Length: 132
Image 1 (cartoon, rainbow, N blue to C red):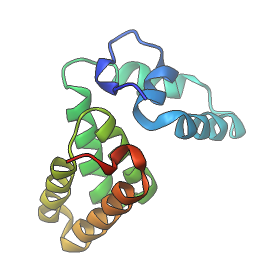
Image 2: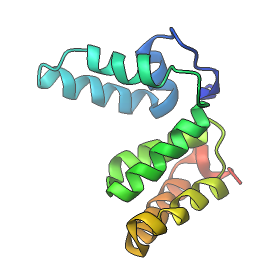
Image 3: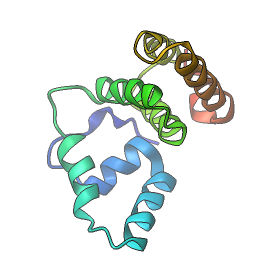
Image 4: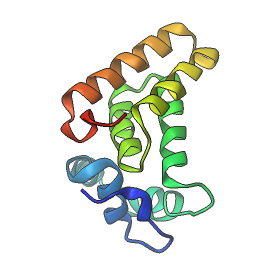
């Protein structure tokens, strides 16, 4: 899988989604949206507009997503964005540090749950296993 750090404004939204969260997750999003007759413009907005902006790096954007999803306690999305963070160049140590920082905003239970989810991702996802 190509690194997601080469995303640029104007790139195709589906390709951006695949680079960040993978083909399986992108297909899930498209299937959910189709099932509920949600127009594709929502995927285009998220990945074609927001994620294609170039003020923040993709790595910074994904670390922000990890922080928010940890505090909001959304484990499925947190897993997906931990993988995306690694794909954009974030390290295991950086991801752990972001989650640890969330203890200040969400409390230790949120931090511990986030670290447990991150550990699961790093142990079960081959692409993240060797990330320092």
